[in-house]
Amino acid sequence: CSAMSQHHLGEHFDIHGGGSDLIFPHHENEIAQSECAHDGRPFVNTWMHNGFLSVEGEKMSKSLGNFITVRELLDEGVPGEAIRLLLLAPYSRHPLDFTRDGLKEAKKKLDHWVRAVTGVWRPPTEERGAVPDDLIKALEDDLNTPRAIAALDALDATGDAAGLLAGAQFMGLLAVAPDD
Image (cartoon, rainbow, N blue to C red; front, side, top):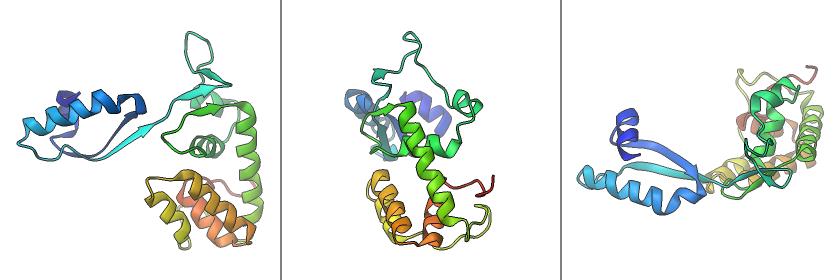
């Protein structure tokens, strides 16, 4: 991996990630190899590790026949934002159990947010309002997405439609116009 990453990304790059099962010994050895090969210079700025994904309580696996792709979900008409919200709901290092019920709940929450921002909605490509500080602080806190989503829920609860829109679009959760 050290040789592959150096070949494709250079001696030093910004973000390296993988499953939480790779932290030790794989990534720790990769750091040691890469930094030793380059006179102790830092290898990567930020390491990100994710928890495992299961489907309806079982490990996702092609051999079990429960392997689902994002493309399949999109082809079924599931909005990409609902998939994104479901995947962002748990803390990134924690396991995620993908369920159809969870996907329905994510879609329901997004539909509610869309109704809440109808009067202030603008395309994400246009300049948006300021992203709320609570949301930024949550994401700066080790990419704490559950806390960031809670910040969006709080904006919704207080009726701050502009803040909700800015924050949700910042997280890639409200890209579609309310009447789409």
